Amino acid sequence: MDDDSSAIDADTARLLARGGAPAPAPRARASTWRLIGINAFMFGYGAWISSFAMVTLPSESTRFFPGAESVALGSFLFIAGASQLSGPWAGYESDRTRHKLGRRRPMIIRGAVVVVPALVMMLYARTNYEEAYAAALYYLGFTAAMLALNVMYTAATGIVPDLVPESQTGEANGVLAAMSAGGACTGFLYTFVYPNLGSLYWFYIALVFVTVPITCYSANEPSTLKGGDGDIEGVEGGASALDAAFSWRDLASMYYISPRDETQKSFFWLFVCRTFYYTGISVQVFLQYLLRDTAVKSDGTKLVAHEPAQAVAFLSVIGQLSGMLCAYPAGVLSDYIGRRAMITISCLGIISVYFLFIYVHKMSDITFVGVYYGAVNGMFLSVDYALAIDVLPNREQSARWLAIWGIASFIGTSIGPTIFALILHFSDENEDGTTAQSGYTVMLLIGAFWMVLCASGLVLVKPRRNISAP
Image 1 (tube, one colour):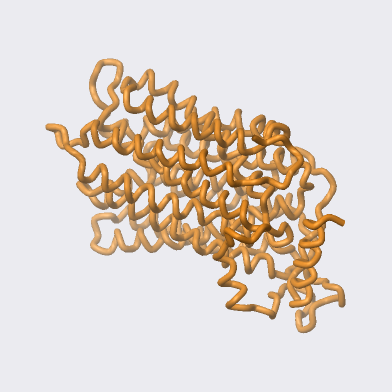
Image 2: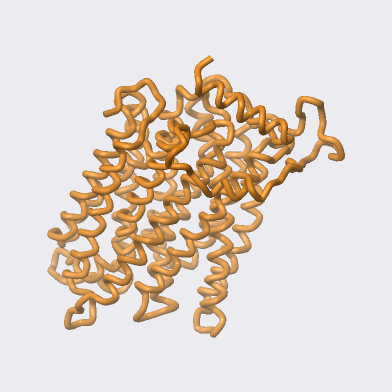
């Protein structure tokens, strides 16, 4: 037995000694259709998160806070990022859960029960936006929705390492990225066809009722109610239970990665690189403002009224389609040439996109930039998760570690929008009151710098896989 197997066995023994729920044994090779079903929730999650950041929140920020929309948007994105701090707690609870539905599905269902009323609350607030309480109510609903979605996402990320063989990690992540991109594409397409944002909230709610049952049906986890000694004592009918050995010390450890521990070192540096990436990619949430202030139509006039939002929706649709087409091949290819090579290529592609946005202003040309951007971003999304699984310190506690990994996007999507919002808020203005090109140039150059840091930091990530990564 090798050292990694010994470490896993020891971790599993300690978990069982505390009465924790054992992880399901990896199953036989999963079919592509089952992988699609398992990742159905990711389709909905892609639609929620992408259209929220790119279309819904920029428009709602202007609706609630005209004249200070960039700062308002930054605050919304900070809340969205901060909600991911609930991830390690959700992972800890999911790893310890004993339920007839397994470890992951109960958390997904509980999150769905919260997110639907929260979306209804947001819809009510934006409909009555002129009321004094509307903005506060919207913030409250948004916070609850983001917390619930993050709990659901954390549990969902644990399904692949639990149920899919390690040899299929790249393929499974390719399917996950394609489903996420497909959901985002669907959300943007809906926005493009129906620019009235009020109906979009009903679309979000419908996604909950469609995707959650499909994922729960496809992720047919074995019951974790039966331990080595049979049914859990005191659980009538074997319904559900939590590991009684709750520990605040263990929970606190969920938020820590050691840069010195040999089993955690690579995971730590991947966390850092992911933070850099999401800080740099946060430029995209200000795309609606960039197009509004710098883009021109074929007749030389600027975009007005709903046109910036529709332009972002259109670019996002073609970008997500491009990313969806690239995601699966990139995931499979990474199984052979290495994850780090694919992520490096993606970072270089994003950098070139930012330089193009500095000099390209015609909407007809920006369309091609959107296709290119979607391809290189889809490449990152298809490989990022697979690399995280490759360097997991302990695969038996995958939800716990992947939740910490998810916090990297919180840090990035908090730092990035804060920096970029302040840059745009204090930038020079044109005569019509719009932000000058110089402000967007600074924002794009700083975004490119974060991508350089991400690609450079990958040299410190050492996957434990027999592939010839650089």
